[in-house]
Length: 189
Image (tube, rainbow, N blue to C red; front, side, top):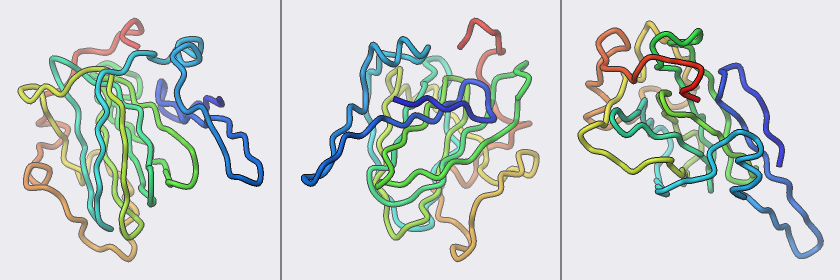
């Protein structure tokens, strides 16, 4: 398994090793020991899957009280996935990074607790799977506006125009208005 650093501290791109022959391929996509050895969480408690049409934008979501780290993968289709550092006091607070995730490429994105997460579907449809380190906690559900000018996320909207967002995401607060996760400390990794 290859663990790739990204421009955001603690956000990692993970490429499992595939073994192929004339029958197809095989990959071990998760191994708790390998994740722990790489300093990544080795315990996930919930798997979520979504199916969306082209132009659907989900996010930027995070959770207070029971923060969730997410291990995200496109099972099919093509998404552009975004992580935003929302940890007050973090040296990268308010910074974002975007990643192309495609179903045919066996890549995962690790997004730690304290980060906002969202994606837009660039293919006709996409199925996305993400494992979480804590359970869904409705009272702690929060989001930041996907098009907040302060974040200035360069969403790839060519050929899409205005994305389709949920009512909740459409009225999400800006970064300046949002209730944010606890302060960043090096121990909170």
